[in-house]
Image (tube, rainbow over all chains, first blue to last red; front, side):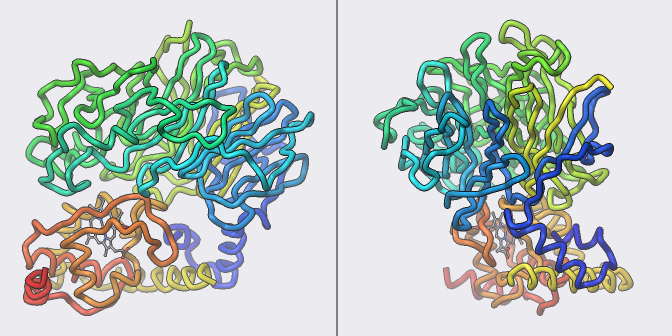
Length: 423
Length: 137
């Protein structure tokens, strides 16, 4: 906010106040715009694509789902009473629910959402409207939340299972989190109840750890995940570890701290281990490197039993959304490919990276080419130094019934709709 | 109401930022040393302008801790913070690691720097004060 004020410079105090009130009042100032926006809502897109802000000022808009009839559900990260979920219908924005959280998926006739501890589902009627906003079924309960990597992001397969991220409440499983000189715990106990993806039944109430199974482990934190229907497989985006330069300047220089480790996309099978906290993936050497908390020095490799990523992106960009595009509106190269929303880094020194939506082409359920930036300029400032300067940060992704791509922003709560017309 | 206060804070931060530009930097050796400590050990999390990272790491701009009593503040540096309680009404989803490996002088310098930068104005912290507070642990 400070930066926003600095940017605004010498506007009068009264103007500032009204701007602030507008920006932070949750849905009371939420607006829906239906007019085409020649400025593409501030985004930079490939030729032929257009963007429009269909809603603004929703609050911290996290994950998003669009119904077959085009209504848009957005999970808002707030504890304000009645403001947990925003529904955009026609020109109208309504809200309901009272819980913080991130997860939001529609599958069949249900809307699935998550708080930072529980998973809920709401039955939908024939118009895909929530029948009883005040009484969702609690599907999963009692998941660990230690106020670090607490988002319980969700996706579902086609066989009635729901996959829930339980992030590690730690950077690298040190005895003392992020403390210089503190060693990694042997047989990292965090992996027993977190640092992985858990599988539960989508239709059973009040499940907890004992009712589900740990589907994959060794994942530090996953916010973006999606079920790939081409080859029936779960794909996730991991948030890689921090602090290599800060805690181990004897092995890593500032530049290496900025560029390591890679932000990884993994294709998961039941029982897979991605290696956290014992190793990290070095995208430059293209190797799994032993973590310095476990005796590594930036060169020693490790993780013989850990899987390799299918895509390695630059470090620290914070992938918060993953979506396989199955629509037909966009040109053929996008079909079945992956969109990834990078929230944007905070722990690179001297210039941050991310704040865009990337695209990875896929063929037969595997990446088939280099990733590229798809939608850019969410931050709205050149050469961003600190995330507080960003006007918008992309977070959630969804596909509309007509094949449009929806992107949320959790700074101001803008919802972008991206369409292709070829013009 | 909170927003109004924050906006007021932000506004005065702009004013003091502007007036700080006219002063000669590095005139005080403790401030120059503190800046170095800050850049090495605090900057990644609390950022180059002390603004922190929204929802993750708190700002060091006019917070109750930064401007508050020295023993509490020094203990945050020595012991870190894993409280999961809101700081000035906001939640932060990260941990502050202990920095007890820093020397008394380094802690004094970095806190003096933080308390007189990013729009803050508070008294300097001395190595003797840090030593006395550390001795109580």
